[in-house]
Amino acid sequence: MKTAFFKRVTVALLSFVVFAAAAESTKRWTEDEANAWYTRQPWLVGSDYLPYDSINQLEMWQPETFNPQRIDLELGWGEAIGMNTMRVFLHDLLWQQDPEGFRKRIDTFLAVCAKHHIRPIFVLFDSVWDPNPKLGPQHPPIPGVHNSGWVQSPGRAALADPAQYPRLEGYVKGVIGAFANDPRVLAWDLWNEPDNGNEPSYAAGEPTTKQALVAKLLPEVFEWARSASPTQPLTSGLWQGDWSSLKTLTPIQRTQVERSDVLSFHNYGWPEDFEQHVLLLEQYHRPIFCTEYMARGHGSTFDTILPLAQKYRVAAINWGFVQGKSQTWLPWDSWTRPYTLEQPAVWHHDIFYPDGKPYRQREVDMIRALTAAANGPGKSMATQ
Image 1: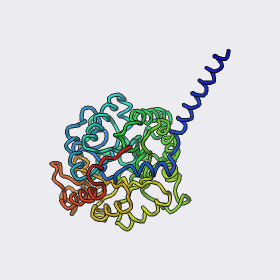
Image 2: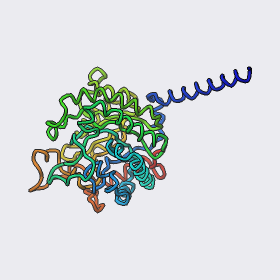
Image 3: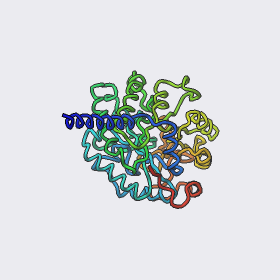
Image 4: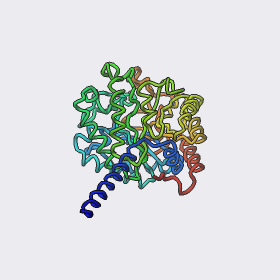
């Protein structure tokens, strides 16, 4: 009887320990935990990455168009100028179509990244641009128009249909769960600009209740992600509105701030505006990532923003890496005024031509110099 009793007690204690450990791993990181993790990282610098031969995230990842050789070439350019991260968008339809095949392609991509000492941030959902994504061949770029083929995830139909939420949950848990302990992954950006209404590009095709739908779903996405017990931090970035206090935030923004392990934001303004927003986020005492910046015609440039990011030790990830099918070297106003008869005075985004030649040699020289000064030899690779 004693033996059976002690066996039951032992099993119960082990079960409790396992349950407690699992519960602990699904909590939001404390400020101390987040900052301790950040001190182990080099200064993080990179780009929002899409290969030149892809118009959107579907074309990047679908088996017929996934091109690891081209990715290898391009990431080599990033490594050469000191970049150690890239922000890369995934899509729920790819997981729905072929979970195992998609997982293998992500693994291949991570192997290429590791070769170049780059740890990516993966973005799972995105509320920006075309609300009607479709698998299969993607349409060619619209002449003269910025980002004319980018698609949302989830699309309008899935966002408005709660019956599809279990599928979205499976995608979040499946992708994060597959790489939850993978040191090659830097972080998970759960939803890009969730409150973006897409004016003037696709506003007419958006659900009238989009804000309410996203406000309800976003907290669930954080819970799904946490249940996969990732060893990497979770985030979702602010990009508009008044961030001066929790009281001034919208429900979506409060979810982003209160549930993220590391805070992230977008800023395409002048350096004074960038610095002001960094100072506003410092009140929360967590690591800060700028996951989108650099729009030359709007005053956001490498010359002005990157030294500020280094000063405040803000992770700096600019939009656009290589001139390609996304056409993001063209300004946003191309949606109302396509650049078909003339080219813009300066590139809007992007760093390299498709052959690897820099758009501005001065920019890549500065990126290389600043990252070398901050990280030094042998510390370019981020660590767990």
